[in-house]
Length: 304
Image (cartoon, rainbow, N blue to C red):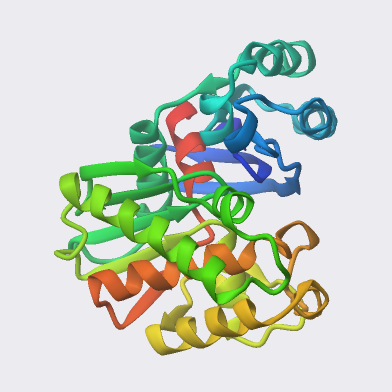
């Protein structure tokens, strides 16, 4: 067993996994798994820069994570940064801050690398070897990965719940025109994804990340977030449409009342749900298999 720490810093959240990994058996035993909404990508789509307050929120989470990593005595650490820090002109400020706190340099990975990690984390424990489409709906981007046991094609496109919300939604709840604008961006991005990834050929759709798990939690009627019930839940297309339509009709206060809703997702979940629904409509699958294991688990395996 190798004790590893994996950190995934995205546009909306930063997450930590400390685990014991045994590559020989394929076993990954969680010791600590946590998530903090930091909204690192606040305003990046508009300004091209990481906001000072967003950086400080992220560094505060890094200090918390450094203490957890030290407590567990992880032997290896890997810090992966995704969409927001790829897009920012001042990402060197971000890198220096992380190095000062954690002693490891964040790797600003490409969308293709992000897709590889997501696929590894999501599919390692799934039974069978059929063609799968893994979709990781993040804050700034969405990754599409098709493969059997290994990645065959992957594409990252710039649609995510934070990016789409900041770009188009000005009212609460969003107006029909705003929803149409979000939809148009999603459809254009799906056209791009289909240029390199045969998304309609996969027999199984596997959905990852907070937008998907939150939709699943609402669909399951959970009073509080329960990862054991969400992991590998199968949510039908009709149910995803019902949840998406409801979220688009609700205002901030109504969305916040969902028991499983993280406060940091309340203002962006409607756009995230619409991304998931649009993908399911495009490829025509009857359901999505929801995975709690994703890029974070893939990062842990890569360092192990």
